[in-house]
Image 1 (cartoon, rainbow, N blue to C red):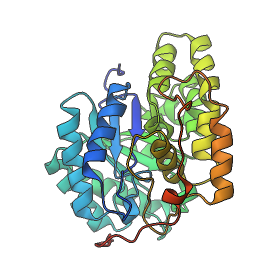
Image 2 (cartoon, rainbow, N blue to C red):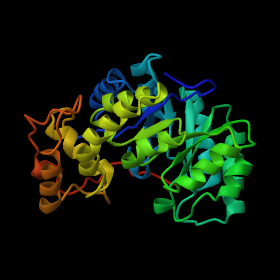
Image 3 (cartoon, rainbow, N blue to C red):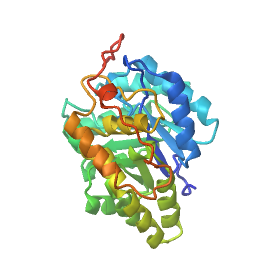
Length: 325
């Protein structure tokens, strides 16, 4: 299922962190959800990423998610820890602890809010990558961090022996092609709507929010691309389109994914932690209208979909706050 030299896999799920109605991590639901996405065809799980609500998880929760992931996967899928920190010293310690907890890889996001220069970004990534023996994915998402990883910086980072991949949520396909032409980096699509376009120009795989609902179609797309079957890949891409739109367009992907998973009966609560909140009435109505268009997508049967707008309303204040240090 994987390319030669690729330690991550190809179909990766940006995992939501199921929570109880009062905002505490629902550990039995976490285990159940992890097992399901792996059984559906995922090669790997990214825990504590954006979709996992990393900003409002404690360090202890982040490390336990790695440990639980290793137990549940039992070697069936790679467990990659995301998130990190916009403080380099904290990021180093967190990733070192994640390695001890059993992580198979780490995904380092560009420092957010600080808006460092490219020299600062370069230094941050290098120091974190130096601190671990795990393979590294760079996470380029300027829409959230405020700054992109520029092409020249990516080329310099590609020389680091531990930095093997990029998760691209920037959407500059000409730059992706340029980097693929000049480095051995693996590229992962970080935009669910553009998975097939990324793969068609040489990307390795995807790290998907929508795959929380069903990873099976992404397995079909990747396997079809691997064997040069664009017709099958395109047909599956088109079937997925309304589900991707429902999940990724109207509210943050975490919020929509939990709303949908709860409506399918797969998690006990759609609750997210503040400052995220569940969809408002009009947003929920649009999501449900999009889902009504989903037809023939493996693992996404909405014939018995029972959304609960009241359960999703608002956001939770957990008993123990997250921390930046």
